[in-house]
Figure 1: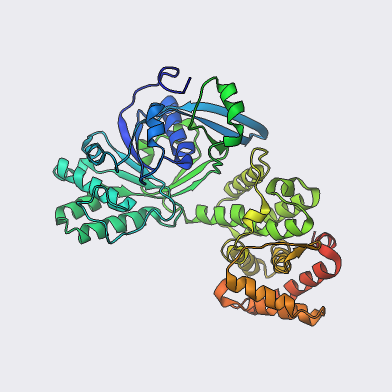
Figure 2: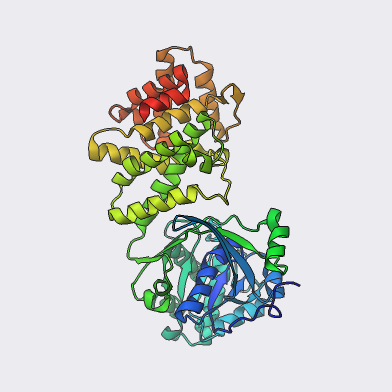
Length: 481
């Protein structure tokens, strides 16, 4: 029997949330939180899901009465935990390509309070071809502008009928960007000044930062899961135990979104920049730093890396000794996040291959690791050994082989061509290695600056590259440790 009201009764709540996006992430992240707030904090809010693209999952959602099973797998309080629950937060789902009038009708609901979205990073974009009379508009912001205008007209510009909009797309200033595009449509469509004023005065746009790994639909485990559940569920979704939602804006939203009352890791702040920096530097920076060293060491996955005696210590010391000291949040917050990151790396339910993370390693190093290197140098006067060793290892990895085996690295054609020429011309001398290092560090297109100007960096990278070339990464790493 398939999951639905017949086998799982659910509470009925007011339709206070409109959600653009029906994919795995929102269902494993936001909808799971709404479900918890309904059950533990009397939130009394259900979600109407809007399918932002022509093809999607709304038919399956409606077939299952909005119900689906969420599995959270990972390390929780030091223990490996796999737990599941039926999420009851979604009341119904609408495809605006098939039911545009039903879509606009949602705007007239006086109880509607929140709009949440995750339409991929490309979703918050302006399409100059969109028109108000389109049914529907092509872009997500175009569809949203039409809906907001419908609400403005339905309630005669009543300021009490404004909404709280929290986009979850992974772009900086996502709330500000979304508002900016809506106002651009208002101008393009010649909407009245009253609507623009209502947009400014009645509606609140929040920038937000989201963090949870969501592997998605566990296709290869469904036979076992169906047997365990005792029912069929075509919308099972898996996520890791860790979750973090940082929402930037006025503190009064805490009263409307009772996340703290039920222990959810939701942070309300007037500036999410330090939290974004923390995530990029610690989580993404540790990933990027470990990849070349671990691959050269002969390891293939993130979990194997952190569980290896030597590489595990390398990653841990890089985080706590060289990255955390460059950040400005309170130490307890930084340590909490660093500990959580290491637990996430050890998650036995996720097999994260290092080669998949190695994509565009040079640009990733520039955005995720280099700021820590430069800040560490600024604060201590020294260069961070492990982060610099990672840079040398990356250069060596682009030689294109590991222990005699050819490695198919993926990067821009310009970068691949540069490394191929440099290593092709290498004459097995110290000066030849220095030429490679000097040329790579001089690439301002990659690093935004000439890194040869950073005192001591050229010498240190050349030394480490020489040690890797002569003795192999294992012996070279012993010296660094």
